[in-house]
Amino acid sequence: MAQPRTVSNDGGVASRRGFETVRDMVFSLGAVFAFVAILLLVTLRHSPDPIKVVDPTSVKQGIASNAPYQASVAGQVAGWRVTSARVSAPGDDPFAWNIGYFTTAGNYAAAGQSNASVKTYERDEQVNGASAGSVNIKGQKWTQLQRADGKRRWLVRTDRGVTTLIVGTGGFDELETLAKTLVPATAKTSVAANAN
Image (cartoon, rainbow, N blue to C red; front, top):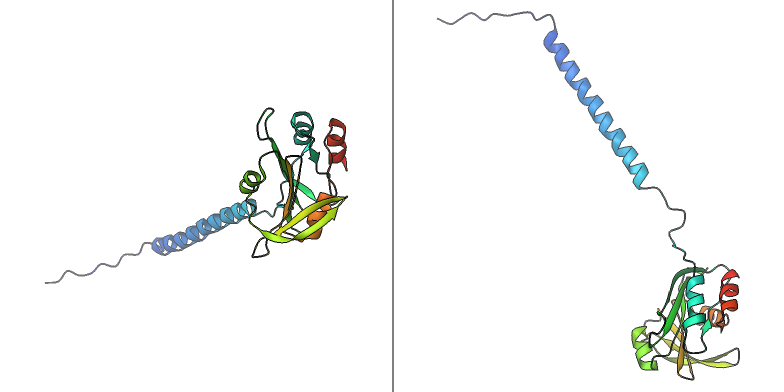
């Protein structure tokens, strides 16, 4: 014989528990979404300027005081930002320096010098362009080189065993602008060239 089913009345507790469970789940999801939204706001903040600017003053002073040759330093082109600067340690042979810029046109440009052999310096600086002519800047002849894909250009000049190299991703006009800022390195010009 089958047992009779007993129906009990719990006073609506089971239905309230079901409602509370759904409500608790909605609150939990809301808390998780709020946490994720705050996390996204913190991590995805837009940086106003992603270009990191460096101060080349100490490098220019190092060039002026330690170069074993009459070095030149690059001055500041209006609107261009210095993004890298390095110089060899005193007594290094060969002695080299390099200062890189982010141009107003959004290109990369750099100036550097070394008393290494031309082939060694060009290898170290990854110069791999074909001759594109020459240009006269401030009474000095510079050789123009351009990579086959046209994405990188160089101005190269060697005088008394010192090679000066201007490199960039912009046109030769930008490289010439940078080459025109080169002045003999002295303690005075190193500070003044940075102030402009």
